[in-house]
Image (cartoon, rainbow, N blue to C red):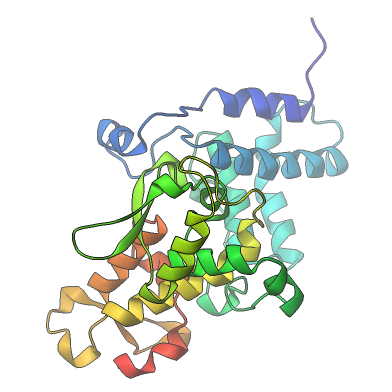
Length: 294
């Protein structure tokens, strides 16, 4: 019998078998008849799953050193997730760990029989805090471009002047060739940022990347959230004007009673590269600044 591979090596082999880079997740959803098909479609998602499962492997090695096979380690997942709860990790982080392990073990996160902490909007901090003044001044062009377009870090790193155009509706757009999950989209530029976007694009050749170095997503998320809030404020209807219940998005818990325009939310979500309107409600919109729509 050959030497047993390390837990991390086993994890990499197992997750690699699920990769379908370049394939359409939407098509796979239709084929498998589920919103959550069994494969991994983007390199970024694969890397995230790998990182989270490696973290679990380190924990298993430290707490159950006799466990040498990843299949045998499945029994310790509930213990690990409860350990994460005891460390007061955020509900979002614990869910991310559970999702990665569920993908590894080809099951659902509910199968681990763990009482997951509730994910609350109030606990999300990354879009609430602006970077310090020095960081903003150092990356002013990138930040202005991000605020005006809502692009992610890797999308900003790929954009060229050829991707920027004005459509028949009079708006300036940025074509994103490979967004989240490899999807293409057209991101509408905020009117007040059109001069900045045009200026930065004009300084480069037609197929030359506009930015050589781009901060990571966590550093830019505040400005994507600012883009979302500005765009929503421009197109959203006030509460009294939304006559259809289906077009009302009623918030709960810490924002109970606040009503948002579902149509405007979905439009903004698509500009950001998301498919669901509730994503911007929890992670992007500055609800307090939208009081005029109530």
